[in-house]
Length: 320
Image (tube, rainbow, N blue to C red; front, side, top):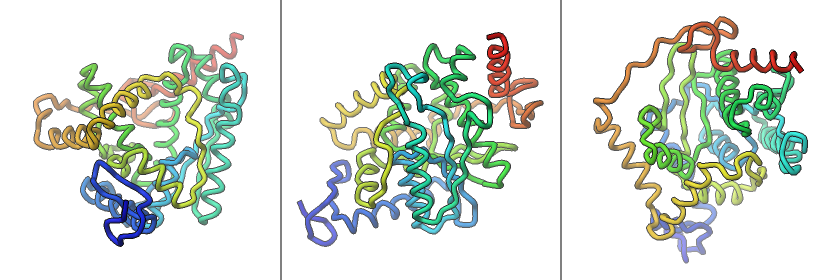
C-alpha cells in the first residue's frame, strides 16, 4: 500500500478514513488533525497555559509531544499512585508499575527540556492508592474509585495553585467510545450530559479538555512508535477485568466488521448533543462551595469527597 500524498510505501493504514500515509506524512498529519480538533471544539489558545496529565503511557506522552510540536505552552503533571509492590497488587502483578511510569515520564521531559510537575500521593497524603482503598473500603476491593477521586483532586489543585487555565488528558477515541457505550447501555443520563471533549471551567475548577478524543488507540500507538517515544506498555494491573475493557473488546469486534463504527458512534453523539437532543434534560449545575479543609469546590456542605476520604482513611489507620 502506498502513501496517498507522496506515493512511497505507507507506514500507517487508517481504514476508518480510507487513508494510508508514510511515516513522514503521518507524523505531520497527527498534529494537523489535533490542531483542527482543538479549534473545532474551542479547547484553548496559544495564549493559555496548559497542564497535561501524563501517566507514562502512550496517549498522554503523545499528547504532550504533539502540543509541544504545535507550540502550545504545555507542561506536564505526573501523579505517583504507589502501584509498585507485590503487597499492593495480587499475585505480585504490577511490580514497579508506578516507578517505571514515572521514570519514563521524567525521561521524556528531560530529553525535550519540558517542565514536569510530580506529585507523590504517598508523600503528600500518607499512603499509596492501594492502601487508601483498603483503609476506606471504597471500590469493592478495587482501588479505581479512590484512584479517580484522588487524581481529579490533585490535577485540579495543581492547575489552580500554579495558574493553569486548562487541564488536558490523553483520552483517545477508544476510551471515549467505551465510556459512551457503557453510559448508553445503562442509560446513565447524568454522565451522558457531561461527556464532551470540553468541560468548561467554573470558579475553582480548571477547564478540562481531550484533544485526542477522535484518534483511534492504534493511531496513538503508531505515533509513539514512529516518533520513538518510550512508554510503559503495561496497563494498570487493577484495570484487568474492568467493564471499560470489556466494552472496548465489544466495540473492537464491531469495528472489525464496520471500519469507522467507533468514530461514527462518538461523533454522531456529539452532533446530537449540539443539535439539542438532550436540551430538555439539561440540569442546572449544583451550587458549589469551597471545601472547609482544602478550599476546592464541592457541592456537599463542609468537606469535599476527597477530604472525607482522607479523614476516613486516617481514622481507620489510627484504629489499627
